[in-house]
Every structure is written in C-alpha cells, then in structure tokens.
Length: 96
Image (cartoon, rainbow, N blue to C red; front, side, top):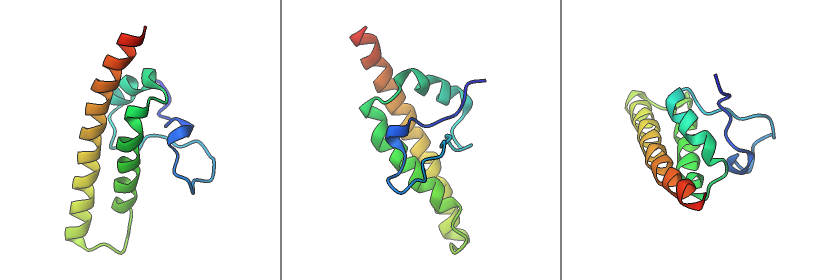
C-alpha cells in the first residue's frame, strides 16, 4: 500500500515538520489518485479545508451538534478533494 502522506508544500504553517499523513476520512483509493498530482496547486485549498475540518472533529470542547457538523465538514472536504483530483488529473494528462 502506498504511503498516505500529504506533500510537504501543503502542511499547515504551524506544523512541526514531521510526516503528515492524509486523515483516515480520506479513502485509500482517493489517496492513490492524489499521489500522481504531487504538489499540484489544485490541491492546496481542498487539503487546507480538509485539515481544518479534521482538526475540528478532534476538538473535545464541541457539543454533539457541533461535533456532528465538524464530521459533515470533513466529509464535504473529502468531496472537494475528489473534485480537485479530477481536475488535477486532467491537467496532468494535458501537460504530458
């Protein structure tokens, strides 16, 4: 299985520099589709949204409704990442 690592370019500014894997909410088949895109700019915003959404799902100060909304945001971020993967794969094919 391929590693589930997010390209360094997309790590949050305050990240400590360790390897940052895609969260488990991102299916392995999507990680495999993202891998050839590397540091494509189409991934920047969706990955940023994903990381923020997943961080909210781990916030223990949220009540049940807020936690449910955070999980919805994470799933929506995965959907945006899927769309970016489709867009990016078209761009990669065109530049070859």
